[in-house]
Amino acid sequence: MSSNSNSVTTVAVSPRLGVGALRGLPREVTRPPFTPGILETGIVHLGCGAFHRAHQALITQHAMTATGDRRWGIASVAMSRPDVVGALRAQENLYTTVLRDEGAVRAEVVGAITAAVHAPSDRIGVVRRVADPRVRIVTLTVTTGGYCLAPATGRLDSGSDPVRHDLRCAAKPCTAIGMLVGGLAAVRRRGGRPPVVISCDNLTANGRQLRSAVLDFAALRDDRLADWIGRNVQFPCSVVDRIVASGADATAGARLGVDDRAQVSAEPFMTWTIENFDGERPRWDLAGAEYVTDVTAHELAKLRLLNGTHMLLAYLGALAGHPTIAEAAADPALSALARQFMLHEQGPTLALPELQLHRTVTDLLRRFRNPAIRHEMTRVGRNGSDKMHPRVTAAMRENLAKGRPTPAAALLIAAWIRWFDLHGTPGGAIELIDSRAAELAPLAAIPDPHRRARAFLARTDIFGTLPHLNRAQREVGDALAELIHDDIAAVIARRLRPDLGKVA
Ligand code: CS2
Image (cartoon, rainbow, N blue to C red):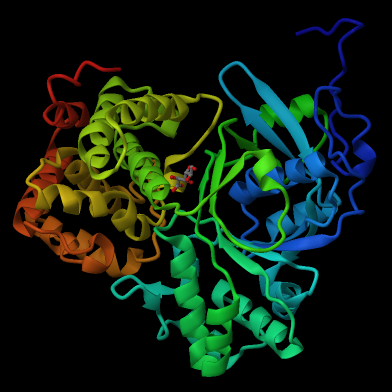
């Protein structure tokens, strides 16, 4: 394509994003409303992933914009990978969030991060930051595994290697729990006021689970420390929602004319529901967050409708050859199954009025279909063994107990089991990332699909205790046998209710 004299010539190397590059950005890009570098650090965040950057960090920037209160800069800690830390540091901690919907793109440079920290390179520093008297809030996105809980008991998995390491080597912890307890112990020694600790992970009762893990860990170090934390530290539950793309958005990068290696791309929709707590915090409520006395109803609806259906679309969608959630959700058979799953399996276990349930389901199907968000199956499907119970089998359990059919949940589980077979097959797009992959491999190798389904479902640490287990095992086994031998569209069609089968 030839360029005319008015067009901007594409330069081979764009300048790196940083304070100096802000002036040159296109006019429509929102800049941070403060000079980066003048913020105080009032928040430590553990888990500097794409979700944190597109959600909490952005909301915090908006809260500071609304009030002019500059005390809420974030020291954001990457728990394992160094790449995002390197990228942020090279950009004076600036990055762009690109919000994308079908027709619209909105870009904003975020300057709320005051320090990017790589935990494995600076374990002592992370503990020190948690204990810093100016830090009033610690937030977390470390995924379920980061809570170090044994699924069967919901208590700290004190026998696991990382926990044992942190108990031996308290000054240089490698787990989020060890870092929190180390920081809180230092606050106690100093006689200070501890920060409020807010979980932003997709877990049931995330604040209470976090509190349990922290108290169990602290008690293994010193009973008086555990007692002090129990009496003084607040762990409000919170429910987060925003669909964030798996990788950078190359088109948006090119349009901005800067090289931004920490960019995130997400949908415009966003919510953050936080249990009330005492203490200072940024005015997140002026930036889209809401405070409630109890997050439970909201949390169950989010986990079961959005996250559970994400799993259904990821496992079945990948088997059907769709690389992203948007493509799976645009497939009429999968979309109809997703709708049926939400309305007739997950929905009846929630305290949502019928009309609101229908409205939520319609909105979710639209959000899933957002073609501007590249949400890859591997990303959504990873760590299925951690996610299965809160998102899928907790509701399935209630349905089985009440004698309600669960064809979509059974098919979802079978599709997950099928991932273990197809993982690594030549040309296959299926990448299996699961903390229990090694221990599940022998089960996945059982040739008979019904025996295989029985072996998987016997794992109560993954699926919880299901009533009418034989029936569930038979249904999952049937679905697995069909997935092995049949065309996936036919397998889905057999499970669609006639009244929903035609819904696109
Ligand atoms: C997804 C979530 O990867 C996953 O497990 O289901 O990250 C989901 O996109 C967010 O919870 C949406 O709020």
